[in-house]
Length: 165
Image 1 (tube, rainbow, N blue to C red):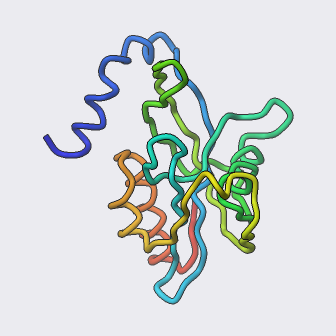
Image 2: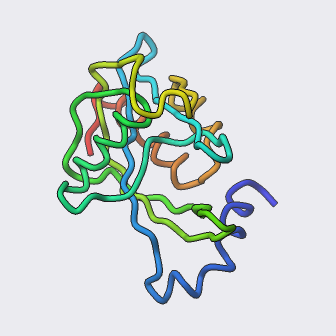
């Protein structure tokens, strides 16, 4: 069984919840910066399982979705920049909650061109951060749809020298 099959097989027990509309909605920031190789993608580790992913979190009542994604990028990775207001895409994953609870989550992903990085930020002691070329970043993340979004951004950047959402 290859990696996409393994990922989707983890979601299979929860399909009844998905079809019932019982999905957790989250927002995420696909952070990138210009580099000598074109662009690099920012990945962070999750707090519990230490998997590589992008900054993401729960939407906020007082913020638009893209603003909440921008806030997550700051809190989880210490980056600020220019965020796109339109979603670049979506991906699904199984979120592990307290007390061994699981929920299927769909993440709306927004592009954020990083212009400033800070060493001090709210979750700096809880996460590791790395910058990687899109092909390298895609290998490190587990979720097939997120891999696809990272590679899509890399292709769009290469084709136009800047991303087109």
